[in-house]
Amino acid sequence: MKIEILGTGCPKCKALTANVETAVKELGTTAEIVKVTDIKKIMDYKVMLIPALVVDGVVKSAGKVLSPEEIKKLLV
Image 1 (cartoon, one colour):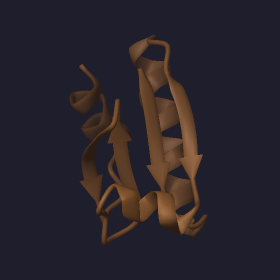
Image 2 (image 1 turned 60 degrees about the vertical axis):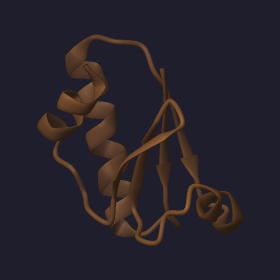
Image 3 (image 1 turned 90 degrees about the horizontal axis):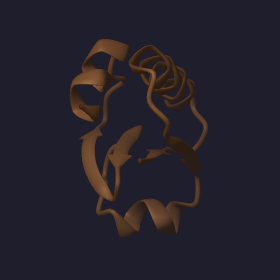
């Protein structure tokens, strides 16, 4: 599984990254977690709000910091 966090490195982006890492750890699954900060790459996903969460190439959330519990629901 590949999880991408789209954002510029703002506090919300960092919080989403931490929550993704927590969710993956709690699920006991293996995932490649990638931070995407390049604006052109973010725009390739047609995301207008950051932070955004992309799982295996599909945008699952944009514009909010999901909790670890919300993220786990998206990963199973």
